[in-house]
Amino acid sequence: MNIQNTLESAIKKGIKSIYNVDVPKIEFQDTRKDFEGDITMVVFSLLKYIKGNPFEIATKLGEYLQENTDQVTHYNVVKGFLNIVISNDYYFNSFNDILNIKNFGFKNVAKNEKAVMVEYSSPNTNKPLHLGHIRNNLLGYSVSEIIAASGKKVYKTQIINDRGIHICKSMLAWEKFGNGETPESTGLKGDKLVGNYYVKFDQEYKKEIEQLVADGKDIGEAKKNAPILLEAKEMLLKWEAGDKQVVALWKKMNHWVYNGFDISYKDLGVDFDINYYESNTYLLGKDVVADGLKKGVFYKKEDGSVWIDLTDEGLDEKIVLRADGTAVYITQDIGTAIQRIKDYPDIGGMVYTVGNEQDYHFKVLFLILKKLGFSWFENLHHLSYGMVDLPEGKMKSREGTVVDADDLMVEMTNTAREISQELGKLEAYTTPEKEKLYKTIGLGALKYYILKVDPKKRILFNPKESIDFNGNTGPFIQYTYARIQSILRKADFDYTNTISDIEIHPKEKALIKQIQNFPLVIQQAAQNLSPALIANYTYDLVKDYNSFYQSVPILGSENKNEKIFRTQISKKVGDTIKLAFSLLGIDVPERM
Image 1 (tube, rainbow, N blue to C red):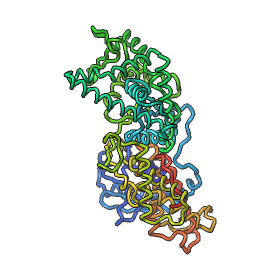
Image 2 (image 1 turned 90 degrees about the vertical axis):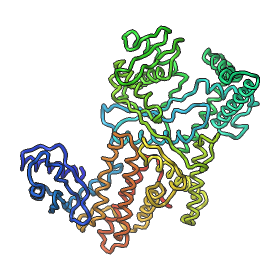
Image 3 (image 1 turned 90 degrees about the horizontal axis):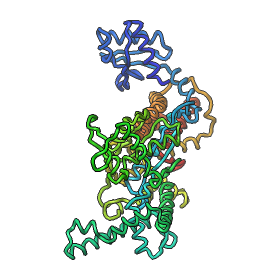
Image 4 (image 1 turned 135 degrees about the vertical axis):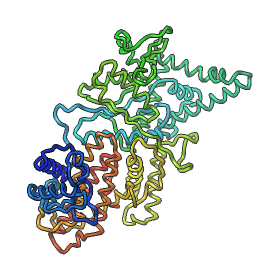
């Protein structure tokens, strides 16, 4: 239990004892630097429960704490603020309690704890991953790790959009213009090769439209009747009918794409436990709609289409089956959600990592599942996030609009190389060591820059700004971790002994308090689905450590016990940085 929780419990008892009043919450803040104290209680927030002078209330509570708690040595009152001084013994005892806990802050999965399924990535198999997928993957993976650290079992999943007209466009273009080329014959990743044919289809489609317009056709008619589009639609019908040749081509090209995705995921440092495929799920939900129609959840219009009326919930009417009986996306999502619960009965909730342009879609989906009578709808969450923009001209892009994920990762490594060489920090490294470190720094910078921002906010991502060895950046935190490892390597003494007989420096107290907060931050980040809370906690911890590093001698202290204690604190800060960054999917280098 951290000091705030300990004091809150004691103060509530004191208020009950003195005033015979129960209060729900005690408000604390950091003690101002010009006053003595380790933590400050704000008395003004109690005035709605206790009548009296704030100074007198604070004084009585201060006296109570001093007399009834071992942790409080003395206090002072400034207006309506009770500044509390905590004993050295408390800091020693609480630090020694956590010093040797290997994964401090991480909770094991409790028995009977329901699992959470987190969906992210969910790409189309007609093009490579792009910048939007990077934020999606980083958020989904990090939230999965944070929820797992909070004490829940997690299933990481994606639904791969491997069917539809867009897939047939790539297939048809390769069939027409590919001359049998493969990833092996071209040296291209499979997703890149297939993506090129998606672009090729679009180019040929536009040419045909121009020709049809030149021949006197209306633009709308030309778009609908371009021969290559009609061929793609025919190919989709053949695929749905199980045509062997089309299905074989579909399997071959999808296999190329999956191999390409696997490389991108490995480079990005994300993974999945379960894959769902739209080719297997696109028919799901139709039976549910039929059942819901009988129960009056849905209704049928004259043309045969099936709808749900959500106007009483402040939403619109929503189609769930077209007049020809085919499903729409919401139908598939209904069926897939239900199927996942059938496949994994221990799931108690699901998190969908999808951009904020789909906010309305998920409101509708969750509401439909509620109306269908599924109690677990309450535990469905849309992790909605904003877009990522880049300064113009900073990155290579496809068609001037989409930034390729692989290109961005390579660019980050190159930028890390360039800046590191300018700073001249790595002269003693071998070339392979340098290249590994450039990638660690570059990807760490990318991940941290994206994850430190609240998911709901849009991001303007500047690669060079993200790779800065000062400020709220990944490399700054990585550098501090490496500095701590250097201290530990230089420590030529045993620093494992328990220390309890020195005066604790205020900078050491600040670090112990920060470390104590880590378990609470993990729980808050899991509850809010926000890696930003972990990222910014880590930055605050590192700022406090660097202030400590600048203020007191560590290995240079003449007092042996001080030297041991400060080395122990350094190690625990390093361990906490490493754990926190693991939740963000970021590696930390032992040397920098």
